[in-house]
Every structure is written in C-alpha cells, then in structure tokens.
Image (cartoon, rainbow, N blue to C red; front, side, top):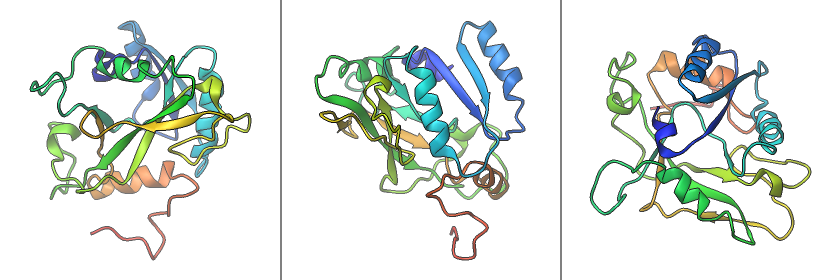
Amino acid sequence: MYQSWLGVERWFIYDNNSDDGLQDVADELNKRNHNVSRHVWPWIKVQEAGFSHCALRAKYECKWVGFFNVDEFFYFPHYSGQTPLPGQNSLRAMVSNYTDSPTIAEVRTMCHSFGPSGLTEPPKQGVTVGYTCRLQAPERHKSFVRPDLLDMTLLNIVHHFKLKEGYKSTNVAEGTAVINHYKYQVWDTFKAKFFRRVSTYVTNWQDDHMYLC
C-alpha cells in the first residue's frame, strides 16, 4: 500500500455511509500487517467532529496524526534530486523532522485538486492514472498535527486545528511535497461523495448556487 511505503503506520478510517465494503478491506489489510481500524461515522456535515474524535483516539497511539481523504496521495516532485518515485519512509521522515521542535505542532502541505479530465465514467486504470487534469493553483492545505499539543477544545476547521498557546504551524514547500486530491471525479462519483461527507463549511452540491464547469 502506497501510504505504508511512505511510512504511515496506523490508519483510523471513518466510514461515512460508504458502500465500498470498508470493513472487509480493513480486515484484509490487517492480515497483511497494516494497523487499520474502521469507525462508523454516519452523520452528514459533521466532519469536524469526526476529526476531533479521531484526534482523541490517536493521542495515545501516535506522535503525529494526519487528516486525509482516501482519494488523496502525497507526491514528492523532486525527491532525491531527479527520481520520480519517493523513497521508502519519505513522508515519515519529512514529518519527523519537526518532532523535536519546541514550537511546531502542525505541518501543512498544499493540496491540488484534480477534475474529471473529460471522463464520464470512472477510469478503469484507477484515479491516479485516469485523472490527469488539475487546477493550476492549490485550493487548500492538509495537516499533520501533534495530538498532544492541540487546544483542549479540539476546535478545527477541517484542514487545521487550534493549537495550544505557544505553538504554531509550518508550511511544507511545494517543491518538497504536495498532495494530489482526486476530488472532482466523474459526476456520479462526485454526487455520492459530496452528499455523504461534506463538512459544515462546504456548500451542498444540491444547492442551486453551486455549479461545476
């Protein structure tokens, strides 16, 4: 699994009414020595609460915890000079650089959103190969945080948390790493995804004033 190769050791999967058989997937991954747990999270527009819940769970198991979608993948554009592939544990090494910092409690990576790329059906070769067109500029960032250094309120706005007093975030340079988010997929996939998991701050796709060209 790609994320495991990059150095991720523990997965907390929040199942927001998925029909993908996630428990079977988690069981199979655990048989392959991946530490995966599934938590049912059936409510709509409560993504922030799910993040807070996960931060509490991860606090006693993880030094750092990241909050990402299953359709997001880290990309290292200039890893080791010229090679197009990241090295083993490269993500873990990047985040671990901040573990001993006396002030950094959140590491932010810019996130580029990919579109349907002219397709009308899900690509048979998978999202990372089939979707090739993305927005020129990043839409937002995604974060790794130190769960022990979050504010006691666990307040978050999806992509970042309120930190304890005296701590701050840092931004990873885009030349070091970015996240490719296969967000705007073919229409049927897009509709199902946004109906289930939109956060409090995301407009519902069914509203008249939301459109996608």
